[in-house]
Image (cartoon, rainbow, N blue to C red; front, side, top):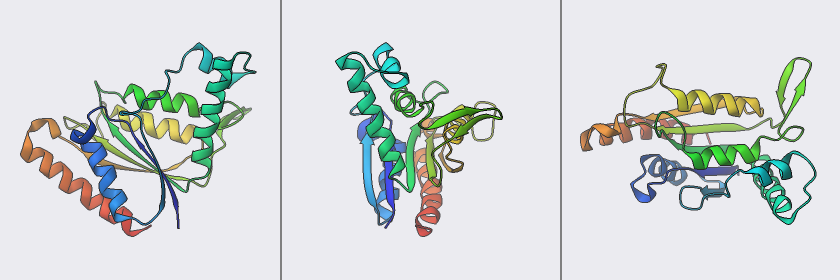
Length: 195
């Protein structure tokens, strides 16, 4: 049985299209699931203590706690076969809660390293499924920034097998939401069949 790490990042609770689709995928698979909802339970803001604690030798209790949190989050990734991200687009970017999570994950010498040939990701053998929810229609356009960011940052730490599922146009009303959900669920059914 696969170990699946689920990351939700919407601040909209039960009204979140991305979170609803994450839950739909969870209902279709049999797996050991570890889940975080950072919209409901955000991580501590990645500040000077977090940066100092995770990039060097922590010298204060606050810095030590940030290092321990980062180690825990990285450990969850390392123990997972598949990562599932629910990613709504806010103001053409990812939620701040998700960015904070990624800040805790990206650690030189732990999840990536710099080499003579450039950065090298150290988390390998993982697959990621990224469920993107957009109010407008952005797929494959210059404004498809959430996809570009997630693809880049996951590749950076070594996760190169990344599949994207879109729920787009949800800002256009109930009919558009239903159409977006149906399209995304069809893709998720296909993905679930491969588990």
